Length: 345
Image (cartoon, rainbow, N blue to C red; front, side, top):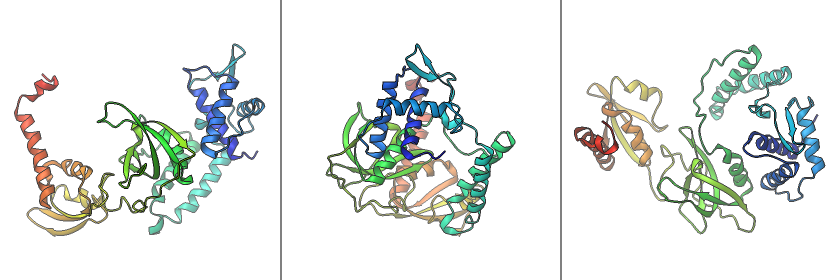
């Protein structure tokens, strides 16, 4: 049974609503939610009829789509899932699905050795693991890095579509430093993941300096239909190329960073470079001297500090001084009785 894009959006929306059990959902509520979703994702303002929602619910209940959703009606009015843990996103794959995924994996594996398709390696591994688990009904044999409690992922679809369609959005945002949230126009350009946390890069109204926002600090997103999208000449797929992390100023240029790593820890940096530009300059004094060409920022300092005494920054002087001050501050804290200030006995 072919499913068009609008129907999939409605099924996903109904599923999302029925999972939120703190609210009671009538047919009218589901109609409104689906209409809002279609307007947000497709720009359609035609609305959704009650008959369409009723048909959607019947389809979700049936075996036609493989959902067999346990949708029940309470008090002849309110719709919910009989099983509070159910979601259409958690249904098991059929043997046909598994066979098709197996064929896809075999095709993708042919590209794993090509430099242009290096990013496919992790995708193929995840698919292989998923197929193994589903076919054999066993636990996963690969444990991928993940954060189940990561906030902000709900905004990914909305922001991706806004970028693809070049739509201005209103974002309600509260940074960790701000006392309260603020709402402003934002012109989204690029999504970025760093250390299992998502960010969006774009421009605020009449802004030239690109701004990076963390998705876990976003409180609301709404499309702005009447605002002209501003395309930044500074933001493209290479924006993050010369940096570790996500923060930089507009005119900041990469610097040559040289550091010494002791012999014990050097293999970890050799096999997993801090940055793709990393080179070994020389082996010296029971260790190695490396060089990378990167933007000097907060994330770079965090990475360096993570190696503790195993790493010494040699240049540039400003970075060496910043690392020294961080370490000196930590040392003074441990030497003093400042633990009392934070309630540690």
